[in-house]
Image 1: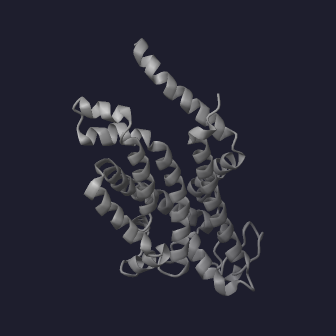
Image 2 (image 1 turned 90 degrees about the vertical axis):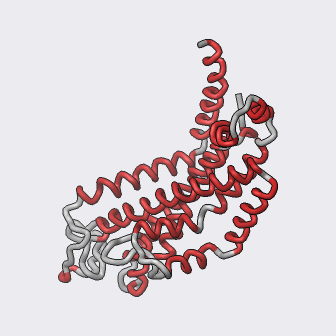
Image 3 (image 1 turned 180 degrees about the vertical axis):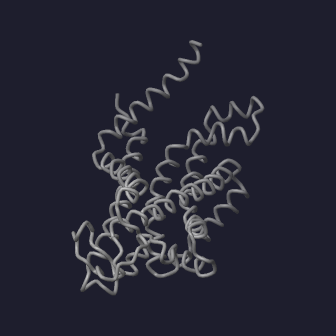
Length: 292
């Protein structure tokens, strides 16, 4: 029991120091608060607003904010803009989180395998990663999106398929630096299998950079969904996403600018918040900033 406490104490102290460093990062705390607020508003908000996101009211088209309870005004079909923004947030945030999970899992598997086995396996896997990185991400995404029926699931998979390469590179470099450490050599000398070493020894010690990469991947996925939907290859009306709301608003920039301003602000807030959190996590988990 004493030995177990002694072994866990450094990890607890390290986590405590990382948490204190993260709490000193004001932009990261702002990012956490903004993300929580966006998620709660998207999940709970539509049920608290007395308007249906799909109800058309031609009499109140292009009502400026605020207008008779429409705090953000109405769109070209008289639909309440605020409730549509929150419903769109459900779609955009869901795609961002789901694409992050898929791309991070796949990139981590590729990176761990390449870093652990090395040699021909590493060369083959990392050259595949390099080949994928040669294609500009937005063009690769548009090519993939052009051959599928756009919906939440397919768009999530397409975004994940174009976003895992950076995670693989980060994980491969981290695992390769840990590969020759004493605790890995000791585990191999004791007869631990390659799977055990990869997923029970190497992966837990590389979790910091993976978390940072995953956080930044959410921001990138939200932005990519907005790109694709803005260009008409993503989520299709009447379902709303922040990207297709911008697409529908571009012809009304002069007469009803709020139709573009509010979705743009939501995208900016979400992407900036995830980037702030990623920066805070990177600084908090960086041993160079480790203070007593």
